[in-house]
Image (spheres, rainbow, N blue to C red):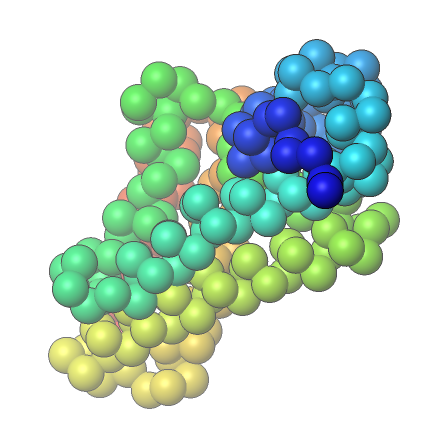
Length: 196
C-alpha cells in the first residue's frame, strides 16, 4: 500500500509559485524551494521530479486559480456589459499598484519573459493561457460589437491589441514604471478600445 503524502501539494506549490513570482526561475535555488515549500529533497523529487517540475506545477496552479477564472469572467455576460468586463480586466495592473503597490507583475507575463523562449513546456503553457484570455476578450468584445457596429475582424483586432496592452502594462509595473504612467496608458487604451 502506498504511503499518503505528508503535505498538501497545492499549498506547497503555492509557496513555490510565490517564490518564482518574486524571483524568477533562475534566481530560485533548490534550497530556496525546499525551504519555502517545507519539503525534504526526497519529497520534492517524489512529488515533482525536479525544479522544472515545481515550476510547471506552479504555472498550472496559476492557470487554474487566476487565468481560467479571469477568462471565464471576461466571457460571462452575467458579470456586466462586454466593455465593462474588458475595462475591469485591463485595469487590474493599475489596481495592483493602488491596492498595496504590488510590483510583482503577472506570473504568466513574467513566465513568458523569463522562460518561454528557452523552454518548450513553459512556452506551451504560456501560449495556452494567453489564448484563453484572448478568447475571453473576444467574447466580451463581441458582446459590445452589436451596439457599435464592429465587424468580426474589428473584434479580433481589439482583442489582440487589448491582450498586448495588458501584458505590456504588467511588464511595465514589474519594471517600476510610475503609477501615473500606468494609469495614463490604461486610460488611453480603454478610450481607443471604445472607438470604431
